[in-house]
Image 1 (cartoon, rainbow, N blue to C red):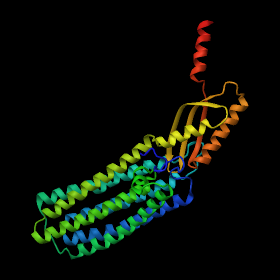
Image 2 (image 1 turned 90 degrees about the vertical axis):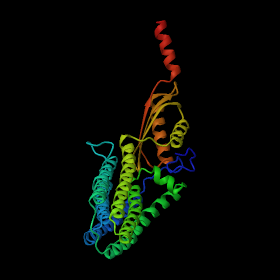
Image 3 (image 1 turned 180 degrees about the vertical axis):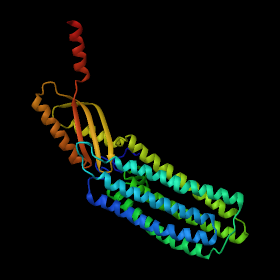
Image 4 (image 1 turned 45 degrees about the vertical axis):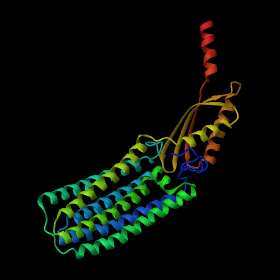
Length: 338
């Protein structure tokens, strides 16, 4: 993560995912497009795989089924995380999206990767009887177009958000807490690579008459899905465990707090990303010794207002008045003297 505020997708001047309803709607639309494309592709690949007897085509069908299940889970995540805070969940439902996104990455692993590797190894060991690959080629071509359209939708959203935050698109994609869009882009990219591998396996088998090419393609598709599942699982795990704001933004929070009258020092700062548009800030603050209770109260109000103005994604601010090191030393001296 870059420490340059102008280069980070989660910068003080440009907080990631500032509370914009259209951004959530755009993420939902991106996932819906991907889900619709993958559902149709999965059926076509399965039919083509059965007709041609291609292990790689059946692996690609499993890949598309896994992607469809993944996107259904991502839609569930997007909808459930939008529920407002209540008495049972006072901090809201934002982190729930990462639970469902984690389950989606597991679905990619189990539904796509495991089946693809198993089917590929089985083909390499047992061999296979290849049928007419023409249908498979046609399905692969149509699937490539549909997956490309779905990927284009996701990439456009990534580029728009990255441009809004003055960050490189790849940097934004790596660090964004909007894991729904990240999942769509990664899975569609993997799907295009998988289609090329499947076509290569079909062509190799057609030219040589050997099922080794097809089996190898199936195994490689499985390995590719393992990688995608691992990257997405790790991203969601970090956010579930609790990922802080980037260093540049934490420094900006400290600087903003120190501009508030009667705040002397920020003794401890805790930040937490609860969702793409939800940031929590908690801090132990050393207030001016001569400040009255009313002064402290109004300082807390002003600090929260300034943080929200500067970072629209900030939803919750908790400030704890805490004695500074000098006051503690004085108290210890007084206690020892007494």
